[in-house]
Image (cartoon, rainbow, N blue to C red; front, side, top):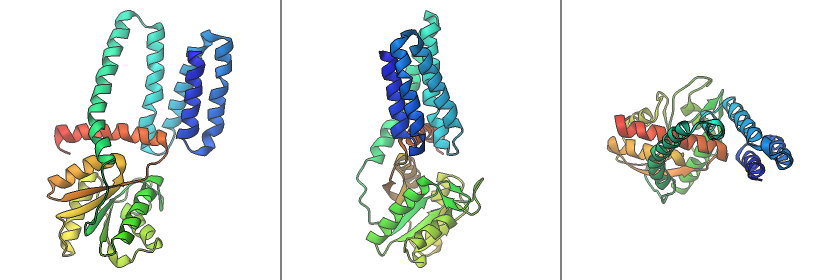
Length: 279
């Protein structure tokens, strides 16, 4: 019964956590609960195969968040094998390692979540929109969500100016900043209210170069709003503070849950890097 329930939960995760065109896969995984009920000894191995298959599938996705999310089903499959076949010493070692890793991630996730769900009221004169992936000349889902939030902010604050920040990466035909500028103009934002920063390749560069752009335009970067994905705000606000900017975070809409799980894992690692090395 336990293995059948686990497969049903895995199917539900695929159904609600991935784009709708993967729902047939969710149904297929859920159907496998029937053999588990009839032949219970197959249960752990069917679940293990499904977890491994899901992990491999996520690794084929283009967005980095899915690659980090793949660690969850792949790790679960490894744990399942270890606790079914491993010797006692190995089980103890893996249990301790899993506990330490969980504590390591949780210690960073707590402040990330606190920043993500803090109050988002802001009326700063400048709003920095942090870049995200562009596919050719098309903004990714994450970037569209950030730009929709930025457009709403600019409409609510007609005196505010946007700084769109992001260079050109692999697979991008134009810079992220140019893609963002076009999107906001299409949304009805006057082009004169948009400043571009198209050289950055990291969050720290986003903020450093955006500050320089604001100051070069004659503005004061002491007080800004930052639009980014919810998971990203803790680190972005901390970096902005280190640059002498008082930053207010504005969280954009989240993407598909499986993708977001991967991005929170990725961000937890980035936060630890920030704590240890300051970047």
